[in-house]
Amino acid sequence: MPVSADAFKVNAICGLRNGAEAVGGRLLYANLVELMHQYSLTGVTCMHSFGCYRGDFLRHKDSEIGSNELALSLLFSGDFSDMWSFIRNTTGLLRGRGVMIVHKGDELKDVFSAQESVDGVPWTYSELYPDFSEGLKVEVYVMESRQSDGLPVYQRIVEAMRSKGAVWVSVTRAVEGFGMARSSKKTGWFWKRNEVPLIVTAVGNRSVVNEALQEVRRISQFDGHMTVQPVSWYAP
Image 1 (cartoon, rainbow, N blue to C red):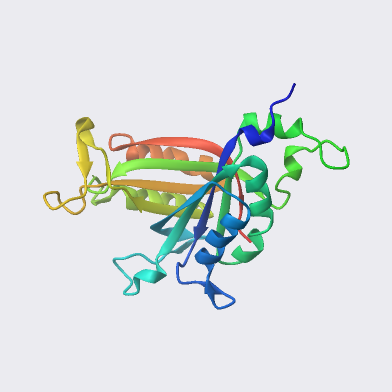
Image 2 (image 1 turned 60 degrees about the horizontal axis):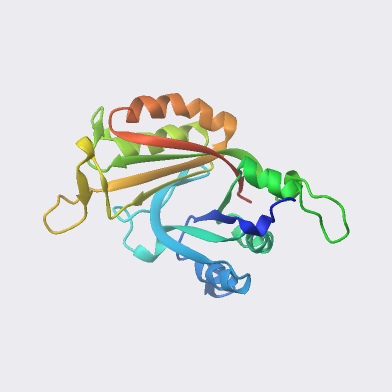
């Protein structure tokens, strides 16, 4: 007996290039959070980020006065069918404003292909998000203070991914994490401002990401670790 798709909790990442972007007189991210409730998703986490979108650098706190214009990364989680309904009905809001990224794991493909639609026609995974592109998501975990050839490692990673054509690259500051020699690093009064962990997230077509990975590995080989996973993404 096939496992129900709703036995899985799935995640989606929505990257917004400008947190102050408004639609219909209301902040876009606030609209998305409200829609999350309407579609019964489990939760959402909103985080300030900086990086680049479609090759253009995003605003960040060191170069912009208005902190409300920082880029946002929204992490949604929920049941499989709820997430699907949510994404189908929100991607139109993103036109020119950001990107939606969903995990594409083999276990979800297998589960979804075993389901049947209302009219009895079996679904295929390609029909789940027909307007989405296939690609890879790379996450590099690195300390903000680490340098490579005179520049911060994270900046070199962002530029490597941007120059190859990644659709979305974001950098998010963490509160605490392991740094060099597995020592714990966290923000606080007694730590240097840049002695905190960062997560660099990059999304793009498989060919684009694969082309950049060799350079990213070279840059981060002694200063961080990296994960890669298949995703589908949508950037209207």
